[in-house]
Length: 73
Image 1: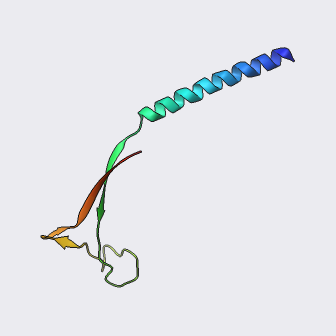
Image 2: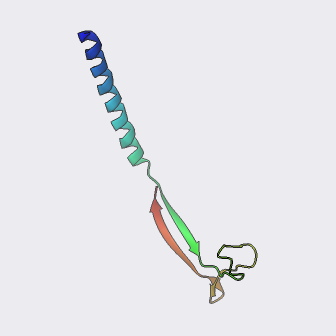
Image 3: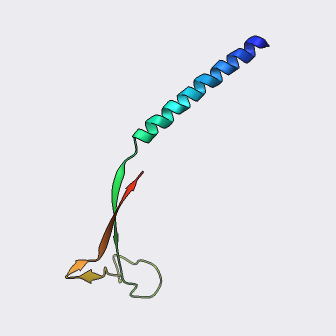
C-alpha cells in the first residue's frame, strides 16, 4: 500500500510539472492580430448586416469608415 501511494505521489508530481511546462509554452505562443471594423448602413431596417446586398459601408471622403484594434490571442 505504501509503495502504491508513493508511486501515485510521484505520478502526480510529474503530471503537475508537465502541466506547468505546457502552460508556460502556451503563454509564449500568444499572437497578436489586427481586427478591422467597418460601419455599415441598415438600409432595410432588419437589424442584420446584408452585405453584399443593400447594406453598404458608410463612407467619408469616398472611403469606408473603419476602425482598427489589436488583440492578443
